[in-house]
Length: 367
Image (cartoon, rainbow, N blue to C red; front, side, top):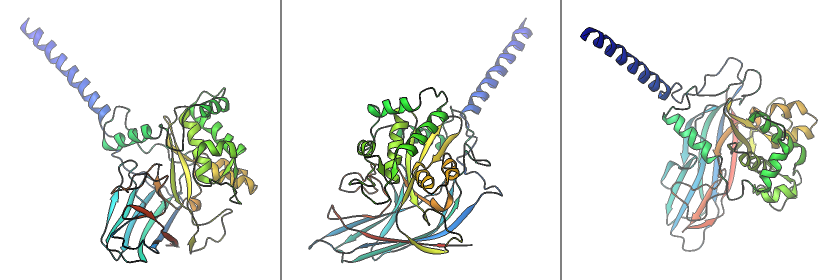
């Protein structure tokens, strides 16, 4: 009898150990937050960017000047190296807490104008392909119960990307529009595609810069005006997606060329302005990019096949570097002014008051 109970006890202990091991396996990190490896067919661009910020003048008697200049971070799709800073005053590289955006921060006591800060960095950028043939799906194979740092950050991003922002409302008439546009669609991916097609079909790209709120990403205005730039069209798309409970956020970066893509690609040049795109989350696919703004522009250029490609993928030359993501940004250290609508250009304050910053960005393609 004693032997029987001993055997039963051993078996029970083995079962408990097995169950515990299974639970630990569910909580274990299977990805380590690692970036996916580049395949032999992945297109890449290696580019040196030189970003110059100039504060041309200051109010008389300025005692302190604070300057923040955005710089890119490593991700699944890009590696940043060789960051070099030229500044007449002390600086440090910081990171804001909300989205993790990086920046060069310069603090100048008793500053003299003009003040110039130059930052250069090299970016090896992979073509963002998730839904296209040969695309990369989830960069993480962890279970939903995983509590590793990578998965905690991803869950926080999904929560953050489901909430309203100052100019991006959720619900109300945008829920009504989103529900109407996705009627009959069951899968989340189908719903996102329907919203993408709706934005491309009903919104116009503002080539002539006619919008009085161009680039502000004011969804309520854009919904009525039906014209804007990439910030405007994508903000509208994000509002619709979030209204259906689908996480989505804006990512800002720079293209090195316009549309259509020139052939051959210029080896160097000046960049005239930012570009942005939207990241959307689907449980089966993970995060994937859509570019409704450029889709509209490629459609205008009679290239509907590129429009279709931009659902789940990005054109490499139009997304040569990702610099920052999100809206309502509080810098590090925090600015005295209100949160920034977005953070892609340098920002400066003199004694806590916003001052003008001129900027120039050039690129050079590397082998």
